[in-house]
Image (cartoon, rainbow, N blue to C red; front, side, top):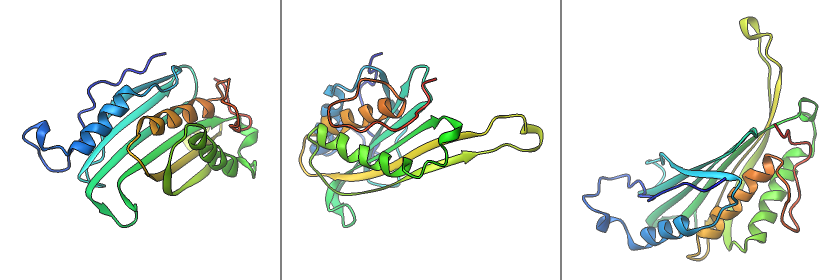
Length: 201
């Protein structure tokens, strides 16, 4: 039920001899992520962060007990900024959830997933720019020695955006809400569109 991530040390791509060598802005961002209040259904904990996307990064994973949905939240920081970001911070998220088999060909599924992302960010008051991403429907079929496995249908959302202010907690909270909703957990906040026919375990 509870969010369990701890000190959130961050992952500088180059070795740092002390926490004092981590930029103050990034340390402040980590503090805000630690103090955020993601939805209790999502068990959130720190996971290994990528080290090649930016000089500094921190990553969190989310699991929903007894529900086929997982997510990852990554905060990147480059003090020099990156042109494609339009800023010095970038949020990158990933969510995947299993669907009922007959829903794999639903033509609206991917677009609903992207709309839900936009609505969730707005619901949490997230100020952002340069948003982009992909929503994908995945059909997996097994053959040969694995032929007895049932086909599975998943929806996968990969997205990123640039924070426009120094309030990072709402970004994490919006992502955690998305993971819960992809798992089909009610209730949803007002104004949020539910993904159709998400398997509930």
